[in-house]
Image (tube, rainbow, N blue to C red; front, side):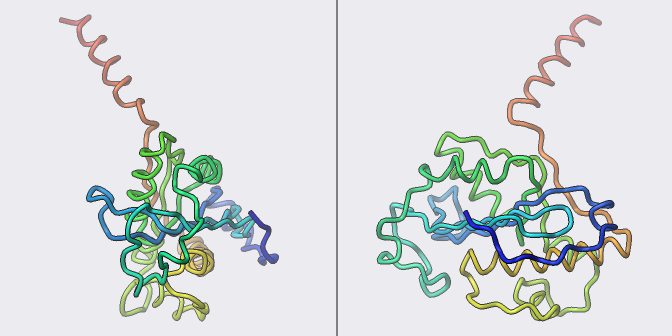
Length: 218
């Protein structure tokens, strides 16, 4: 984990409206469906404070113990994966990075389902309780762009993409996209499209308590 070059903070009004600490992330995968056995081959995380300043960054290749999938897309070959850790080895690090932060990704449901599957398989709880999709936030902001792909948003704001579909570079780009979106959202007084999750085990306990209470009135 390394400190990045200083990033100019966003206006204090942004942090006052959105009092969040963010874990901005991206994964590259062997395919599209973790339920069908697809795995993560690269993960990158940037930790960002409420004023949009990057605090730390971390990334790694991950040995999926299977074919790496669409090499023509992510460029991650078997040779590059030689010596990479399996996901179970890095799961505690990922959990530590995500704890207490809003999980941020572009098309966040995709990254979420892969990390949730990998963490579950490793026996480590995914600690995130809030998720923010920068695609959905861009949609809410009604940007004058032809589509909401990360590459399109990057071009809209003049953010250079160095290696598209590389998790580390995509995360760097996404941090800048998030900063632009937060600034616009604050000016327009737009609420963030946060998805909130109850801790695992919370809902069953709540339902059990409700059933006990209802039995008293029978």
